[in-house]
Amino acid sequence: MAIPPLHKPLSTIAAHHITAGDTVKLAVLTGPADGSPTTVVFEVWEPGGAQPLNWHPESVETFVVLAGEGRAVSDEHERDLAPGDVLVLPLGSKHRITNTSATERLYTLTVMSPDEGFADLIQRGPFAVLDDADLAVLGAAR
Image (tube, rainbow, N blue to C red; front, side):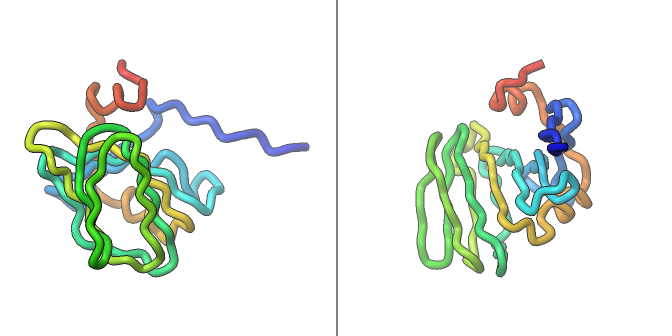
């Protein structure tokens, strides 16, 4: 018998900050808890928000920009980001993404492969709220 596909309504997805006071919300859409070695995350950067410099020695991280604008720094490389862009960060790159807008949020779908503990790191952090504007980006306004 074939294994059925996983289906999760957005209403079951919780957002988190990695640490209190962060300017980026992360919602794990799927990952190891669902039987996947890859984690997919919906990320929301507040205006002017940024991640801390980080790196993943064993993982490739891919960002698909859904809305907003930002700037990615990966090692000595810099790239501006806009809706429709795809950014692929190689293994071990030291990187950071900043929302360059003073008024609009930056939204991405992020794929970490393999997970390398990313989903657990996110889900251990404090809860954050995905508001109607965030959900509308995913086409799921309440």
